[in-house]
Image (cartoon, rainbow, N blue to C red; front, side, top):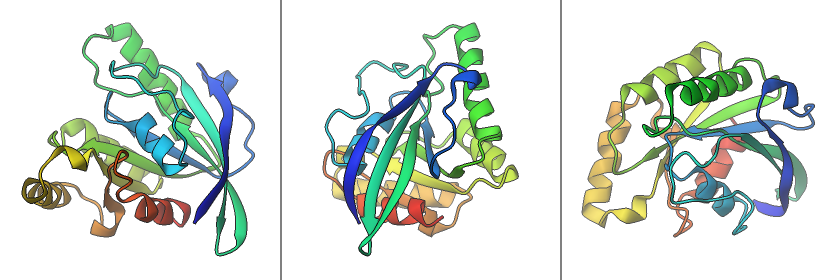
Length: 198
């Protein structure tokens, strides 16, 4: 799989700003500072397509990125969708509620949405937020892939143990749980394969 083109497509702060459907969409969601923008950039082999920040809660809008890639010599198009992160305590309750409404309105009624990638930092335990979100997506028949992020932050022995623990704690098929590292480019091929053939 080879990325031929990756570019910004649209940004929206409310449902009335969502772009018209043009291609299959894959949503990326997870806790604030889990590494969504970094993983998106790594997937398309671009350094600054999605904006990254060390400050949690930076992404407050929904961003669409148009990607053209070839798979077995055939060109395909998709839109990678960067959703606002959740769980950042320093944001007001009103702001968190607004984010939640924005994300749910997208996930609940977006016809071209073909899969959702839920990111989970390897150093953080899976919480009720993640399990409820997986159930919520399953109820809407949205295929879910769990991307374990930042695996390079742990030494190999601890990393392997944590991946096993996380696979055991998540109610998803093991093939739909992918260990990744944006900085080391680990797991990107496997992630591409499963999200483009959900």
